[in-house]
Image (cartoon, rainbow, N blue to C red; front, top):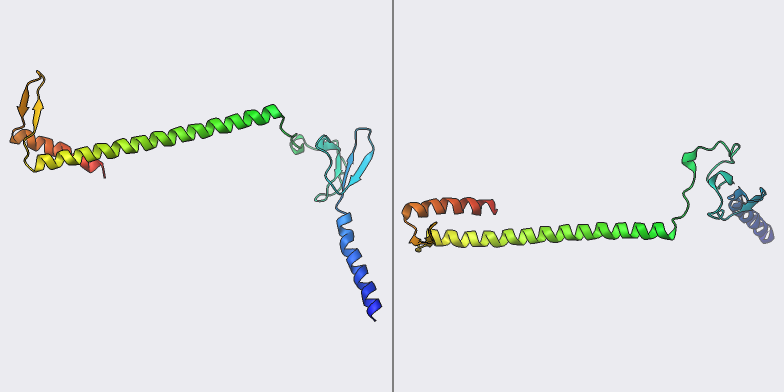
Length: 160
């Protein structure tokens, strides 16, 4: 009984592994002969010469295959280098844009801090001196201080 079950198990295993043998590639080589393998054909074989793939049915009419199904050839060294340079330039542009945005954000933060400090100085009643268009120094009066406070509040509100 043990011998029969062993033979039965070996037959079942053989049947299971025979399915892998049907997963073959068939293609026409440069001389026109058919080649059979469980490995994909070399990249130098045009797509129209591949007669059978494991995931597809055998091709009856290989010459009438649409051009859209042709496989792309591997990239040459020059193409890979150009692609690398393109990706590197795009990354540099992204990095520059991120750095510019960071610098703008830092400038805005600093400007907002200065505006808040100026607003505190105005509201605390400190004497604020300025120069006119002739270069003469003067101190802000109450009306000028009120205008400055309103303008500074607008700036501070834009900071939020």
